[in-house]
Amino acid sequence: MTSVDVAATRVVIEATRGEGTDRQRRFDVMRALLEKGYAVSASRTVPAADDDRVRVLRHADYANGPSALLATLDRAREQGGRPQGGAWKPWFPVIDYQRCTNCMQCLSFCLFDVYGVSADKTIEVRNQSNCKTDCPACSRVCPEVAIMFPKYRHGPINGEEVHADDIRREAMRVDISALLGGDIYAALRDRSAKATSRFSKERDDARALKERQTCLVALQKALDVPAEVLASLPTSDEIRARAAAAMARAREATGE
Amino acid sequence: MAARILYCHCAYARVVPPETKDAVLDGLACAEAEFEAVPDLCEMAARKDPRLAELAAGEPLRIAACYPRAVKWLFASAGVNIEGKAAVILNMRTEPAERVLEGLLHDER
Image (tube, rainbow over the protein chains, first blue to last red):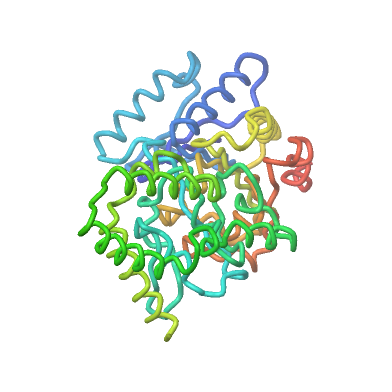
């Protein structure tokens, strides 16, 4: 038999290999269920009847294709207040703790509070859904290539094994300091001080905007950051405040 | 002891070739093997779905998904350690469906 897991509900269908059209329909229904976010499990033991956890799915339920079945399951899911499958593309960093040195660069770098520090002062991914879809920037700044995005196109960020060449290559991209001409936080502070001084004499919003754009384009190219992420960046003041908070947390965690 | 088979459909991204996913899923169904097929392991890991621990419990585990390093640490991110379970992870991003099925089913055939 085959069963379908719908969070609290499991739907079970007769498991025969099937031949010809029946085999195709069985395959179609399994694929359609998976595409819509329902888990399917195949087992040789069949529950005797439906209950609040298990719904037995008969041949007649899918003999005419998966549409009617999916409509029924979707209704149940909606009534149960469970999220529709695919409502969120699961894009978030996964840490390889065999590589991670707990340096907290990712925590300091991420502006969206994806990272946190556990009670034992270890870096952790805390707010997965804060992560910006298709943005792998934090993995680019990881000096140990310890951060993966399993749905990323290229290795080693997608989880491919890491080779020495990868570490050298990533290290070149990683050098945000070089990219921005020195320590990023010192640079931000300096920019802030200079900006305050300059703006007091000659406030030039257009020039500031142009500088910001130039800097963002460089970041976008170096880190493969989607344009939408840059568009959603906080204001300069918010960035400074968040960066300061992140640095404080990182310093506290590393005991510096 | 028969291995438990887990198949990830990676439903919310286009990084696994669809023809490979289809061939593996069809091959499992045709073999009349017991298996668990999930829409997306990443999503389950993000939700810390307790079913991950159930899936990893007991028998040796054979997984058809993506890169082994990613799969291992996805489970770990949900608090499930599969390292000591003699887990075999087959990569549908790079391996042909025949090789994945051979790895999943060699005890069943």
